[in-house]
Length: 161
Image (cartoon, rainbow, N blue to C red; front, side, top):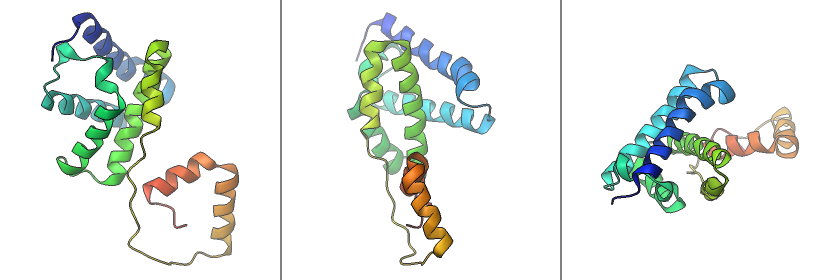
């Protein structure tokens, strides 16, 4: 699948800028988090190469929702990644796509599409473990005032709700 080399060079430049400039300066100073961003994008490129999309044909179409959903399935089935790992990788790719949309407004739709992808959910093996009164109050506080944290905990399987 051959694509415009200018678009491929521009996309590769954006990946490099995200990993080497933007993420360390604006997103995190943690080496582990930066490695997670790097690993996610590397795995995404490996996935694309398995689909015969080379670095010369890298373009906006490569980051559309269908490809990302296929990538999540590939992570689970081929790489045997856990649901939590798939969610972390998806979050890293979303961070890149948000950066991409801020660089070129015409690419903002990629981030919007990626936000619509439902994370991998797992059911806890423990069923019906009761939480105490303080746990219930904490849960109500998370639901009411810290929706993002609540959703992240719930989708990662860390929340006993």
